Length: 141
Image (cartoon, rainbow, N blue to C red; front, side, top):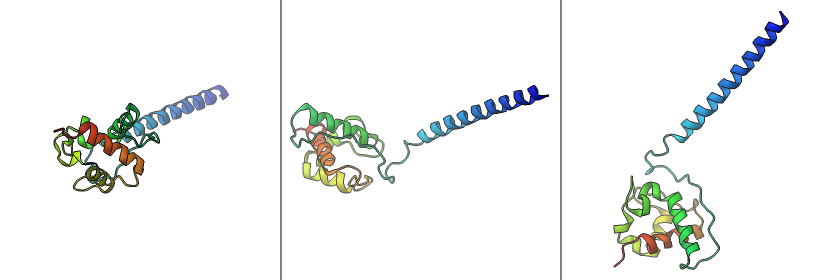
């Protein structure tokens, strides 16, 4: 009878491992669901990319950092390239988007449906993404 008991315990252990793995997969998939919900009332929960220590507004590094920050933190509401999205307005047509001080203030303090990003993004990151909006997204002319 000893071999049957051992075989039973091995099967039970294998089933337990299989069940645990399935549970982890279900939890992982469920955790990723629902992130496209109403972001107008949710605090930002994005991760940010470190930006270079430069404050110049020229050069590919600054623009790339701004583009990445925009993608990580703004695109879900304002859409790709700021063309408008689920909640946020079209920044390509916004008269405010052309004014650096107003864009920085909006990012920092939020307003309307937009949550504040002060405390989520560093001051340098706020400046970097604001420059990106003004220089790359805002209407020209």
